[in-house]
Amino acid sequence: MPLTSIISKSRSPILACAFLFIKQHHSSTKSLTLSKPFLFFPSSPTTTISGTNPQQFGWERVRAYHDGRPRGPLWRGKKLIGKEAIFVILGLKRFKDDSEKLEKFIKTHVRRLLKMDMIAVLTELERQQEVSLAVEMFRVIQKQDWYTPDVYVYKDLIIALARCKKMDDAMELWGNMRKEGLFPDSQTYAEVIRGFLAYGSPADAMNIFEDMKKSPDPPEELPFRILLKGLLPHPLLRNRVKQDFEEIFPDQRVYDPPEEIFGLR
Image (cartoon, rainbow, N blue to C red):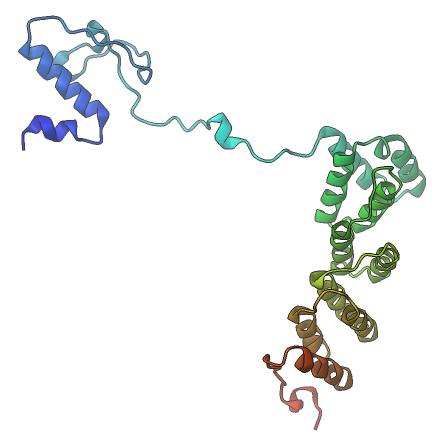
């Protein structure tokens, strides 16, 4: 295969362009002038192959690398939290230990936020595990004209409270949610049951389990599995859950550890 065809198929456009230009220049007596394509960048006159000055013939050196600077559209992510929302989050965290200043800050700054900013503040406080402030923010949202009961807002807040072992606040929201005619989903039941077991209150976990059986949605395995694991030190309660599990999920199996692990002989 000729050298010209090999270089023309090369992946390096600089090498192919330079070779073809020199070949045509030396094989012709006419002066060849190349237009400046948009990929050519200005550079200082330097000596290149065979002592040829690229600017002498109207073309300039091509940049052979990427400068690493991001292109705008590729680096645009989701909309960040607005300045007002950030200011409110910092103010709430600053005054959370002073009830009087906190109430004043809520009246002067929090209540004038827009709807999307309020929701952003609530979500960010939940993410930062500032659950007490998140509850205060949720109470402000409930007083707005645009507020409508939403099971997912309750779900996120209840799960955040349960993971922080603030079960009293979680059950207060649980009662408000049920009064508004909303039923939690399987994940909410699972996290609340897990929270009561970690809180050391298996009786309350069983109350949530009985409430789950009355839900209009079909039950899932996860809450049963969490109870079966958390109630190992309480065999009587565990047997009740096991019977219900075998009736609802007859094709699933339950692992029973040896009784010697818990000293039950």
